[in-house]
Length: 63
Image 1 (cartoon, rainbow, N blue to C red):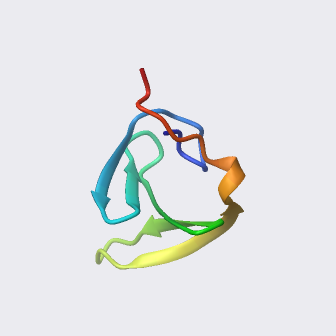
Image 2: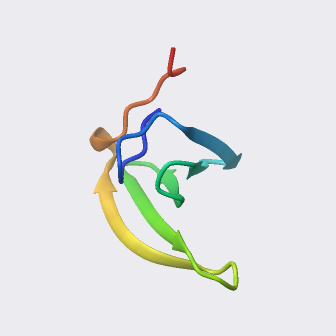
């Protein structure tokens, strides 16, 4: 899978349909055809940054 924000493959799964990018430090979730991208605030809360279409995210093993 690639990060929808920076296209890095350095993505880890943190929950059901929730992922974290270690390159740009964005958190995102996939729900149906929508991908929501969040910035993690200093207090740990999530701030919505962007929404993208499901087609923008590449799924796979990264190999």
